[in-house]
Image (cartoon, rainbow, N blue to C red; front, top):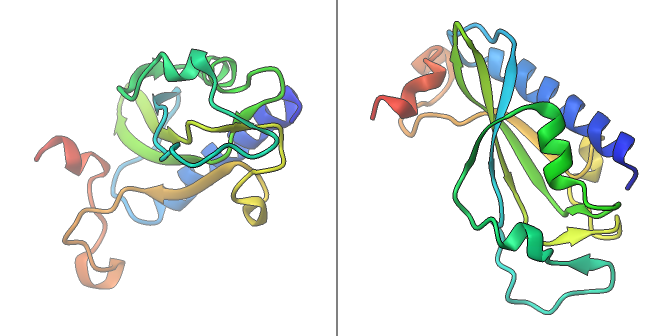
Length: 154
């Protein structure tokens, strides 16, 4: 995958998660947008297929979140000479007057493009469902809108 395509797909996924999230929350989503990345979130015990690799650079970073990344830093982190994670989830994570943070979780396996997930969404390898829903939330009609930062108050 070309770097420009990966960057554009990240931009599309971020905007999609932003728009989807606005449907459910009472918060406003104001820039600047930053990212919190959790790497190596896949089971990698199965044999690798052709076109797959588990980069040592990524594996060495572990699974702890990397906080407060700018857009270009995410691209720099996850685009490795045409190899990208097979799947990446983008969720609106927190919102404040200072801006918004998106939570990125991604596969530890990287692909040259042959094993990308989420092709039908139009911006592979990204999946942008919007927000992390509270455990007791039912629907807009039944539960109403909620504070995006609910998980910080637990």
